[in-house]
Length: 271
Image (cartoon, rainbow, N blue to C red; front, side):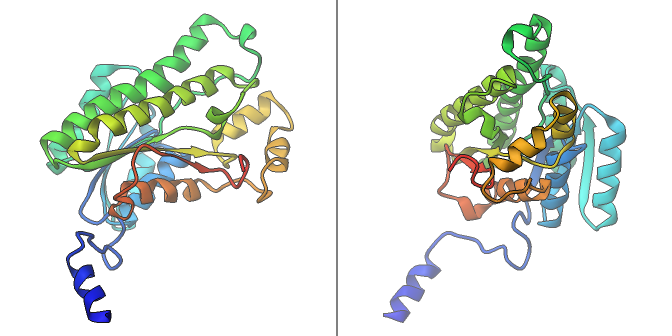
């Protein structure tokens, strides 16, 4: 019986990366990689064996994180990228392929924040800005990434960073929550569309996380951190690395039968 099970395991097309790293041999593209969850993800992906292209709008932040990765023995380059601009997004993805010869995985993490408050107090220009980055920007990135994966690696995986705020009413951040809910829908549609090609698409929905975004919201809405912590069963905020770990798993071959899901990484806030 044991020999039969062993023989079956030997015929299972799963590659172990335990000795080499969860993402060994893969080329990764990460948006919003200059700080917060994106920077944590870029560092983690490199530690797990991926060659990484970091993309964001602020070059100084990108340069700092890239140098940190290289100092730790990883492989990283960066591209200044405006997620609201189709040409800029395509150029960043194309740079990844030009540098590394392929694209295997992508983490669409970059997002714009809104000032907390009811929707009738938000200007049309502010709404358009949130939409252009948080929804249109994700769509632009996915289109470019799918084309690059299809023509180079052939198969791969994409993870979009959503928010636990997309799964419920979000009166303090209505536009942000709405665009993130739309990202969930894009994720599911892409999973169904590109699954037959071997391209998996998932999303993560982080809860309260210790990032600059939360710090900015705290200034506009005092007591926000306390309210979020009180509604989190684990009674603390996540470290950005904890969110990045979930993205890394979904991008790795260990989640090879997972696609079209929105994974809550929220300390139980939506339990």
